[in-house]
Each structure stands twice: as C-alpha cells, then as structure tokens.
Image (tube, rainbow, N blue to C red; front, side, top):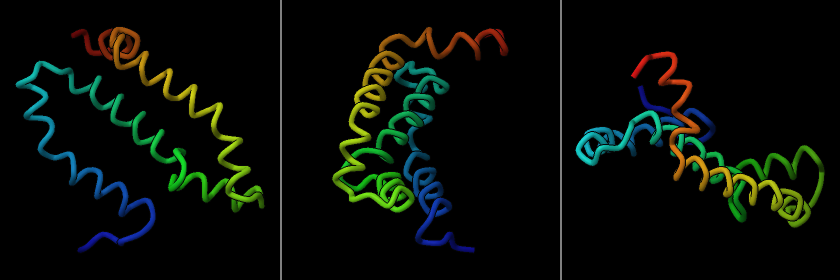
Length: 106
C-alpha cells in the first residue's frame, strides 16, 4: 500500500525513507544514534517553522487569519531561540543524553 502524497503521513514516511542509510554510517563515525535522532527531530521542527515554505507558517496564518508576512514576523523570535537550542544540543550532547543514559544505563 502506498502512502498518501500529502499530509503528515507522507512527510513522515518520506523522512524515514530518506534516512534509512544513515544509521550504519553513524556507527562507523562514532556518533550516538540517540543524539543524532534528537538533533534530526529538532532540525525538522525548525524546518516546519522556517520561512518561506514552513508548513506550520501556513497553518498559523490560516488559524490566526493573518497575512503570511505577519506570521513570519511573529515567528522570528522563536526561530532564533530554536537555532540557539540547536547549537546547544549539538555541541553539548551531555544535556540531551543524560536521561537516556540514566534510564538505560549506558
């Protein structure tokens, strides 16, 4: 059965298909797969709100009945925060891995 071409199932499936070759490469490079997954998910979140074609911008504009320019101006402070958090979790993996390490005892 084929996935629909639009909507969240299609996007989720295409993201999963596009990343199937990454886990073997991560192991060879010594990258923690949990850390990579957290960074990947956060990057996807940034992509959903990043102008000009972020899907969540269109949703925000429709729900708030506001022009796209106003939605973009409203999201910019949050986008800056998301980028700062991305830099922090990328270069300080201990901040994102302490809970999995505590639970699974790695």
